[in-house]
Length: 252
Image (cartoon, rainbow, N blue to C red; front, side, top):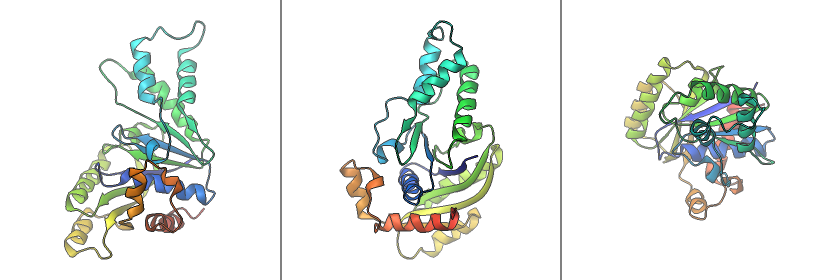
């Protein structure tokens, strides 16, 4: 069974960047195989990892719903859909990537969703780690059969707006069928010392800060140059912060 590391937070706080750095750190330390899952339709995990995404689970679902009779003659629908998911899986030496894509349109998706969810659940069992970049509602995780999340990182930048979004996500967890073993807050673009008001808000949420990612100019440079964060130097402040966090949270 995969160890599931999930990320949640409002858009623009650096959630996808941190998820990419976690994939990098796990890969560099030999904690493989890794499945990276982009479960945020507004995210670009593939891009930050240096990959071109041509097919998503959402594309497969929508194409099937438009033409449910397009299954090759004599082939079971479930086997056909599973073969398409395997084609959508991007396999690299360091990690594999699966992009969930857009949400459902109109119509009844129960049958196709059940097939896709069951297959992706089975697929993840082949990996040592699964790193999931979630949308704020964490719909993908809540639909997984096991509902197990080993580590949930709530990501915010150094702003009260970001923290208040985390508060809402944290409150929402009780309504989801998720079993979260460990949870912590990661603060991005943080100064060397966090002010009292910020820390008071954290205390009210009731989840500890487990990681602080300093402002790292290399992250902006890589973004402007459309380079993979897998290529960041080991002495990058952001890389060092994530490496240190995972040494504590994922020692094996």
